[in-house]
Image (cartoon, rainbow, N blue to C red; front, side, top):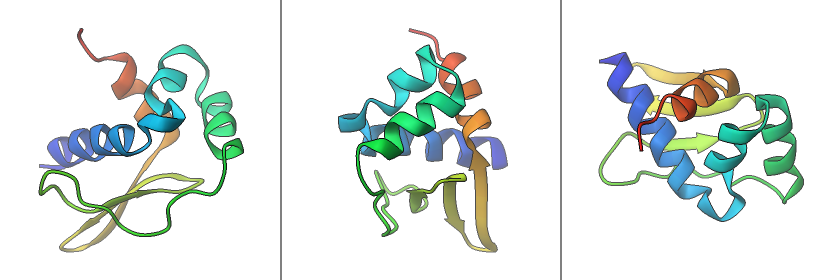
Length: 89
């Protein structure tokens, strides 16, 4: 179950931050440089956002936070980059 939650959380956060080219930066650059560029474009959204009835997510300096029934899970920038680079097009 964790694998599916991580997958949907990272895909949802990339969709929410499409205007900041989050997925493109994670694909092309190191995760540290991608984080710098995304954060440089302004403050992150503080509210929890649910996309397509998935668990609510938000992006922080530490990574993607996902609110699930038993608390909050964190998936770091390295995990996000690994998933984005593993996509099949």
